[in-house]
Each structure stands twice: as C-alpha cells, then as structure tokens.
Length: 180
Image 1: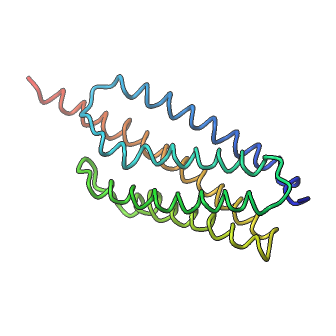
Image 2: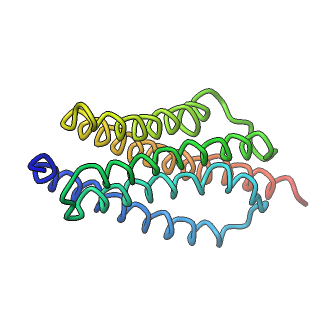
C-alpha cells in the first residue's frame, strides 16, 4: 500500500483542478444563459453535460484513490466500476450526438467527445483488472486515464465556449443586421 502514498500530491492537484473546472463550467453556463439564442437542450445533453461528467469522474477518482484504503482490491473494484459506467455513459452520449440536429459534429468532435473518453474509461476499467499482477503499472494507467479525462474536459469546455462566443455571437449579429 506504499504505492498509494506516493500518489497523494498527484490526486490532490488533479482533483482540485477538476473541482475548480466544474465550478467554472457552472459560471460560464450561467453567463451564457443570459444571451439570446435558440434553445437546444439536445445539443447540451450531447456536448455540455458529458464535460461535467468527465470532470466529475476525475474528482471522484481523485477522492476514491486518496481514501485511506488498507488494500488495493476494494479501490480497484470501485475504479473499475467507474470505468465501465463511463463506457456505458459514452454509448448514451454517442446516441445523443446523433439524435441532436443543432450541430453536425466533425472529426475533432467525434475524437474528443466519443473516442478519447471511451479510451480513457476503458483504460480505467482495464487498469483495475491489472492490479492483480502489476499494481504500480495499474496506478500509472488509472492516473494517465484520469489526466486524459481532465484534458478532454478542458478541450471540450474551450471548444463549446469558443463556439458560443465566436460562431453563435456572429450569427446573432448577422441576424440583427438583416432584420429591418
């Protein structure tokens, strides 16, 4: 269990970052809510909600991996279930992305909203199994996957905000100039 102690600072930093970014997402969403725009709950469910789920997963894993466990087995089971739940959730996100009609996802969207989150969650689930024969490697794998989810969330947050500010604002200004 000495391996866990070595990860304390890592998960404090990563968990703190995830918590702060969740808060910032709420602030941004509140500010964007005041802007006149076409309501699109389907696009929000497909693009915005998964970002909060990624940040929340990072926060959850950081807390779970910092709890005072006496054995790696129970924590590995918990992070394994987290990975499996993430994969199932990503299937739901993929369906939502296909069902919404507000925005047509491009390759980058598919990479950051589907492929990389599935890879990260699969790595989380598989690393839980790997603790049976390589505890140190499994801890590095779950840490890498946790960071990947954090960076995916940062990318997706920036992408969504840039879209709202640059594209939607431009479209609204064009509509204002067209109306008599």
